[in-house]
Length: 124
Length: 124
DNA sequence: TCTGTTCTACGATGCTCATCGTACATGATG
DNA sequence: CATCATGTACGATGAGCATCGTAGAACAGA
Image (cartoon, rainbow over all chains, first blue to last red; front, side):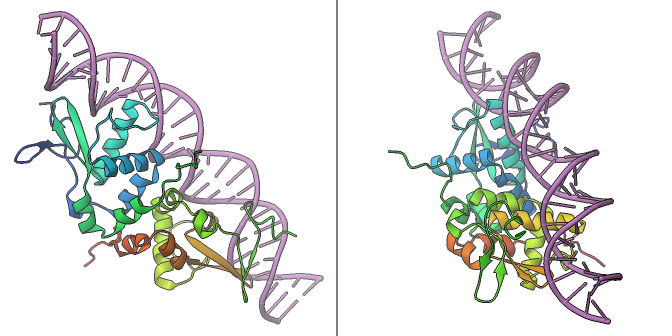
């Protein structure tokens, strides 16, 4: 019963194998929301980590904020259409919606992820 | 003397014909700043208008905010590296730094500008 | 010089939101 | 059942910023 209480904007999605948190349909995703989601440095870092690792959870993502804040950011990323989250046991694994984003905004994520992260400092 | 007081981060630039407001060098432009600049709906609208018209000034841009706010947004866009502004008489004409952006972040602006503006509503 | 236009700087204001701590639900494990 | 780990909801807080009005500088034209 808490399933549909989990998110205000929709119901759980069913895959052949997995259950997914509600997310906007590809044609509902708006470029303004995407840009707003990626504007935050922590969220951009999360996106980079997901692009590198494929998947990530609230605790596995190495970002300098508390767990509840990571959860908040993952929610924002999901509601804007950037990531999809599936339930695996007690954890929730998020991944980039690479295919849908490429369909809706060709070249966008590629261009952003190709950009050099600014927090890379020359060490040694 | 007020020329270098006009912006805190640099001096005027001289072209063969024009004088330009100070702006970051192409390699100083950071993707995070770009995304943050484009995250605001009014600024995104300004960018769309500039892409369509080529150039625009504080008063010529048709956005639903006051002139001083447009000036503020153009400053943000300039300092983030999105637009360049040249002085023509009493007016200041801003344009997208299309070439430099394409060089630094290939496909980025193309992808964003290709996205359908959300404020298009079916009328009639 | 006087007038009108364009634009910016500055201060004030109000709202959005990133962050955190806490409490709680859920699932895994013993 | 008891315990622990994971994640979210919620309320509070503080900072950032979008917006505006006003004042003043710079330029064009008469």
